[in-house]
Image (cartoon, rainbow, N blue to C red; front, side, top):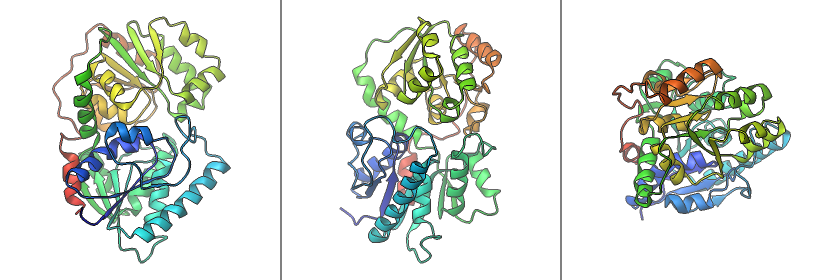
Length: 370
């Protein structure tokens, strides 16, 4: 094994999925790395499923449910973040890596950049690396705090790995950004294809045509008005639908008295949350997607699946120009028209080049981090 040079900071399942192909490529090249897990999501089983090594450091006890926090910014959340940030800082200073890699726009991203940037480490020798840099929704409120976190991460990173032409331009036109900007593409392209190839060997019978539903964004969950709009949109689905339901989504549906409405929709089958491989297989074989998530918009482009986005804004704006990603702004009439278009086979999908690149992105990133 070569000497370890890279510390990878991960806290959520989505971060692990997008860092996974980089980790696998490093393992393939027999380059060891440090895996620092903040403990926000339970990742032990996911590491086994994705064939990556288990964390070298786990900074807090993993939760028994899907996440330690349900999108709520409380005093407890703030204290946990602050404590974890200084724990990360202490570990990084001890390890003294060449690169500190973190992903995206989560609380873990904020802690990672806070712990490793020059502000708290004026004489640092390592370089901070922001994976998936340059995404912008154009509004600090949609989503909050993710939009703020990604801007701060970009501002204080030494190397910014942009996912597309658009994100590269977002970074270059910001004069406050001093780090090195490199367009590499999005690692989700590698992740989705690696997982799908492994899963399709164990093909199970699926419904002929079905919708895949994925709803969990906290800006929707915390609003009864928004959740009511989401449920009203789901009522427009005429074909079968599969819905792997998050525990926090189920909690708020029950809180707002909307769960009975869902149960009355006989074409919608509620399922437990699946592992990522099963989810990707369901996605790759569905007729279309309905989501308020972020990465699933990118995965829809990998498998060329129409995707209704139940949000007011999206930071994945590249997908809107492909003709298969539709930002509904939670408007029932807009959503209904798109649903009818797709279900009646009247949506013509034109050939498009995936704005997030093609397979092999992770190998290039590993070449950059030498």
